[in-house]
Length: 181
Picture 1 (cartoon, one colour):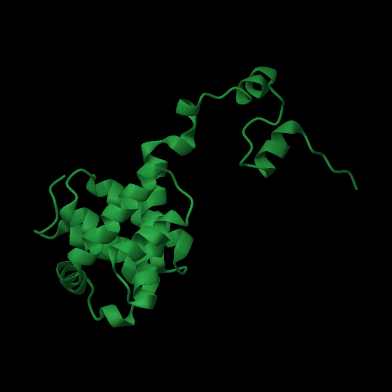
Picture 2 (cartoon, helix red, strand yellow; picture 1 turned 45 degrees about the vertical axis):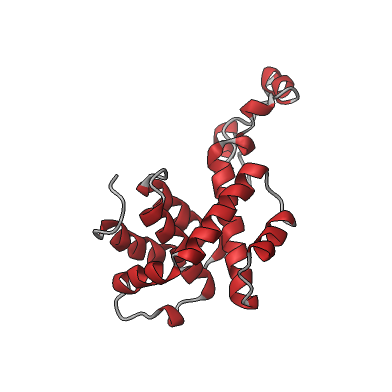
């Protein structure tokens, strides 16, 4: 039996690798990457990290019942993330807590035959954060709020979470209360 692994088949087999041949210029450049070029310092990754921190902080609040600012600050201080990500997380947590009644009302309207109590904690918290962004954060585009919520649901939720959250948030975004695009 003869196996044939040509470079073209290898790159097809390992689709995540674009170029399997070493490139000396790329290797040399990777040692001297400027901090401003680092994709981990981008505003997008700061916000993603902030959303993830907010989700975790709100989960802690759900479990402990302590929603004080000091409890949130202590939680955020003990997790990785730069200052911008942590500040964004604090903004999302405080906003989600302060607008919880309105947020839950909008989610209840968007979910047919589902009550908030029936949703998993993670799914309901992702919905609350994203609904807060959709309705109360005019500086965040609607599409970004939807996409980020779906991606976080894929990471932290169940297999069905992403599609469920996408459907509910689409309804919330189309409602009259959501910000205009």
